[in-house]
Amino acid sequence: MIYEIDIPHLGANIDDGRVSAWAKSVGDFVETLDVLCSYETTKATFEIEAERAGYLLEILHADEVVPVLTVIGYLGDRPNEKVSDRHDA
Image (cartoon, rainbow, N blue to C red; front, side, top):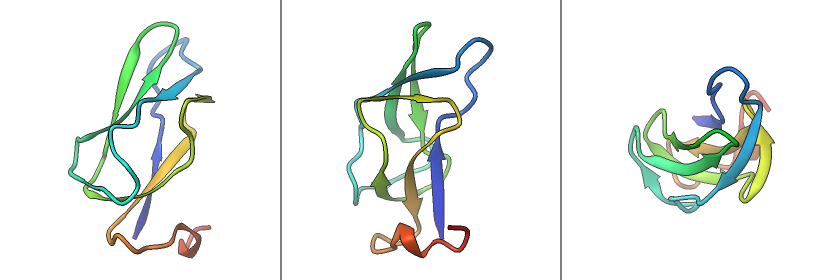
């Protein structure tokens, strides 16, 4: 199964920020709560953690400013899963 990685709601008055410094690469296996990347706002820098274990299948945004709740990548149960094969796509 394929899971979205998104920027969570981080609090009042935080609307967007820069996705920076991915700590994992496509193909890496990540454990639950592993840091995936940093998200820099005008107020603070946040670490975006994996909500579940899996393989990092795709990075959609790197060194870009994106709004909160934006999907920035995908995790999968298997390293060879294709994001284009998602059932909800």
